[in-house]
Image (cartoon, rainbow, N blue to C red; front, side, top):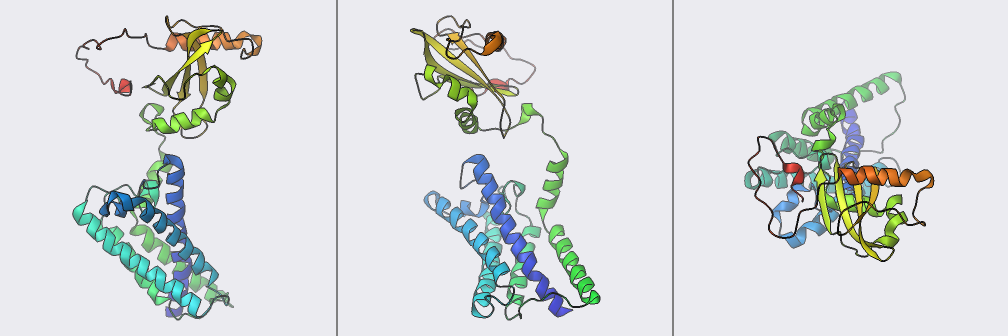
Length: 320
């Protein structure tokens, strides 16, 4: 029984390390920031946070793969001992860092699993790191893992693995967060999509490639949000007259819907697309007019007028 407990630590530890590395990578790709969601890096100076975040993810991924490679006869001996000792030291360092983070920055999450680890560090996360460290150190000197030879051995191994998974799940606040996100569909009006991500999606879109020749500046002249849409205005030129290209980007993380409109820079009235950019069947002009009618009126130059107090929130214009 003791030997079965030691053997199941290898797949459990490998799954935790690779899962943590993958979750951080997904968040980095989504936000475009290496430091995003890496809680313990907040304990270090700003200049060290990026290299430490990269190093942490690389070590987690390397140790997770190393545990799998050295589980059998290949790599048994000194390589396996080094990998398992390194895993134990990593979890001990994580336990100490989480303890320090809880005392100095109780508002931050541990960042262990990216977006799923935003809750403040609790005692469960610290106990989880301690148990994983003990499990890593317990595998040192373990003989190469072999497939069970009898039905009773298979049942014993699966039962031990199930108990280990249940214990880790009980100590992981990320499980509850994952279940909530899985069953919850956030309204588009409340989605938090950074402006940088909107601009990145716009630059990769077919609409941008189609009308980029009309744009005269790399920097947008204006950008604001209204409910589920973010509007981006670029200075442009159409048949020798100043114009503006208005892109409406739906607030969605992946492959957002994008509409485009061409308006006069002075009056804000919609213009017809040049012949090279016109859409077949006249649908482009109809879509242009519908989009232009949804645009808010342009404000005159000078200080903004004083707005009266309203009984409802106007934060949809916060980026104006």
